[in-house]
Length: 137
Image (cartoon, rainbow, N blue to C red; front, side):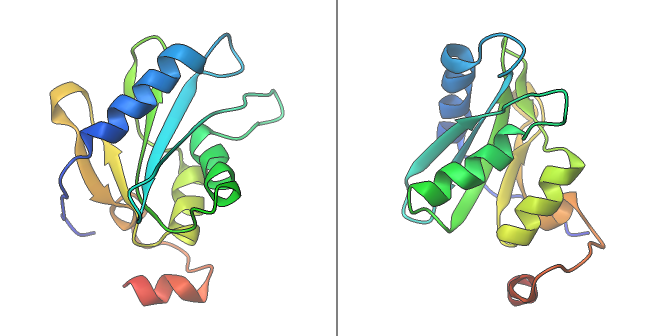
């Protein structure tokens, strides 16, 4: 596990917090995610809760980004509704994010202690699912 820490993209936190504040309504949408692609564009999304295990905001964001032609994400963050702040990705999201974007940085932490770390730090000793992951090491 590395200890690389990257500058925190506060613009992404603000974007996700705004979407969480204005678009997360009721029990079906409680977390918003924002990511910046390599061209500087910000993409946002919200989760789609369902008792069968609907997708987290980070997974919805991957599809939304692809639908907008953004295939190379640089940094991602998730923020909870009701001012809950930054939320770290769950285990499933960590694996999927690593599989699709092995060089991705993820914003984690609380309040004044947020930091941006490589996705590999959040999922050490991982299973290598795709050959493109080997290129990021």
